[in-house]
Length: 299
Image (cartoon, rainbow, N blue to C red):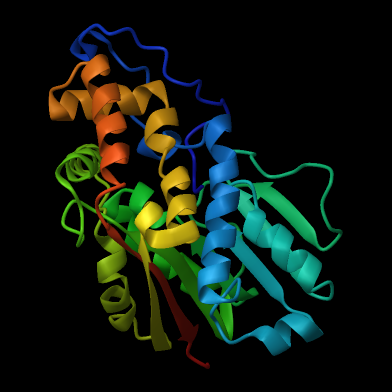
């Protein structure tokens, strides 16, 4: 999931029940929090959940190009579930995934799929007008807000005229409809940690407006799908609840920060997580899954 800050894996939290204010974290990289080994399968599940709900892997209208052969780039590809799926479906197209952390498969993969270790917050090492589709998913809310516009500009630069850029993200916060008190408090803490690391959890809501301000994109489209988290949302809601249990499996660094922001001990945080997920049995939190895509204007 996204542009992670180190190739070293994060262990599961092993904090004691002592007040976490006494613990000094070794890094403050927000992008690095959610990629421990226990959460990789949740990234796979999230992709296939979104594919099922949207009834397709991507929403940009490039299916004919994919069939005849084109070039696709995925930024912050993580374990590369999106790319592996499309590379098998479209053997005449070429796919490239980049991430700063090598979570992607190094050996068993289709011949038309390659990976590179790249920091997407720097100028991307590709020429102008190189790809037919530049895609990113579950990345924007992890990045410093001042870097979002830079990343969008880079995506547009390396996209071919008439090609597409596409974002696939989720919207769920303590202001979402149907949120209960405990789960809302947990999401509030997440928002505070995001702010601490200069990330903007509401960037997805602003994304279409940011694209509209660009003179070199048009045909901006937004597709939303509503999902109720938890058993009251049926099988899909149960799957999403499992995906969100990264609150139980986050890195030690995230636990330190969210406890500090909510003024909780580790023991109190653990109890909040238990209570929040139990609360889902009696509430109907609405999550929005959103795809935003736009075409680069012809030269």
